[in-house]
Image 1 (cartoon, one colour):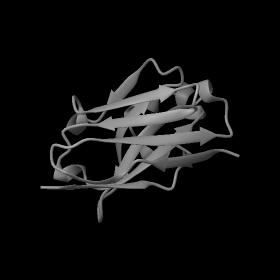
Image 2: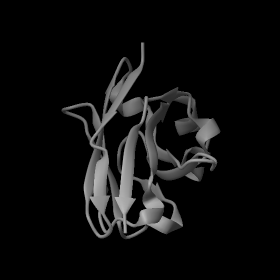
Image 3: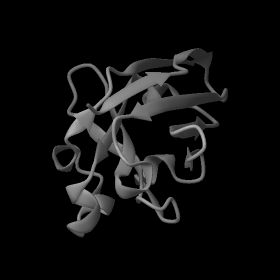
Image 4: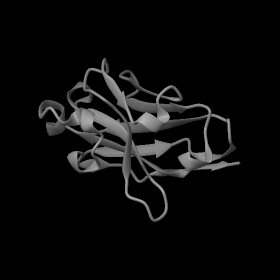
Length: 129
C-alpha cells in the first residue's frame, strides 16, 4: 500500500531554513505526481508546491516563489522541500501528497489538495519572529 512519511520540520527563527523530506513507498515512483501542502490553525489546507511524475516540471504558490524549492530523488524515493528565508506566516503543518490520476488529468499543477489521494501524517514547521 502507498505510504508517505514526512520529516524535517522544526522551530526556526525568521530568515532561517529547513528541509522537509517525504519518503514514499508502495507505488511506481515515476508515475505519480507529488506535492507539499500546508495547513495553519483555523485555515484551509493550501498547496505549496507540486512536481510532476518525471520531476521536470514544478509549480509554486506565489507566497513561496523564490524561497522554496521542491525536488525528487528517485534513488531514494524521496520528495524534498527546501525552505529558505522562512517567515512567521510559513508556520503550519506541512503534508506530503501523491496521486496517480491527477498526473494525467491536466489538473496536477493547480495546487488543489482535493486532487491528491494519498497523504502523509504531516510535519510541523514553526517560524518565530
